[in-house]
Image (tube, rainbow, N blue to C red; front, side, top):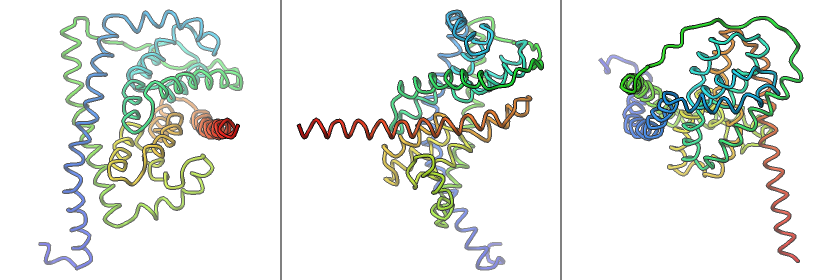
Length: 324
């Protein structure tokens, strides 16, 4: 059948098949790497929820949340999103009687602070501090929520609906629920990572990484990132930190980027990642996309440039001490 195709089409088919073969071992290895992080953390979080630890912690966050325009009970929503995923946080948020204004603030906090243990562990593998990233995202979630509370118009339009929160009531039920969720997650992770690796291989086959990155380089300069970080920025904003880190980890191993460059990108992505997915999901349930995107992009700029400024000040201070 291949012989009936034109030489140009045959060449494209060869490139595609080669990309698929090259992506398989990389996709499998990277999937195992991600699951080594994701599965133990997801089990630990489910056990913490089952034994009431997360609900206990939420009690002490009540006073803090009242200062950012949210009811104290909404700390449960934030903790669920922060320790599990955005989707778990949304499920919790929809069970509360909130105004649209309150839901917008919570949505922003969850965009900045979701799946923290897993995502911080992933970014640690690509050169960033686990606790540094966790503290940064937690602090900035509250800073952004505080400032958004100051500028959001005062409207009391209701949001959400009361839903049924069906959780396992026994420890065996928790383990069964975790196993059922884990195999689906493992399959989904492999499919996404494999397809991502196929795309990456095709970009290498056709030498397209540079042409695609070149138009984004001025934007990288604006963000205070290395000009060659455009591809990583694009992947992180389309697919998020976990899957973007899969590409980043592969590029580090191949020597195409350094850990320091990856760390710089991680600081930006800590504030602004999964921009397409997160914004689309929250817009679908009635949250204004403009507030979410605008605040995240602005503070991504702030975080990276403040970090660069602090780095320059420290460098000058060390140089001055050395000359004394």
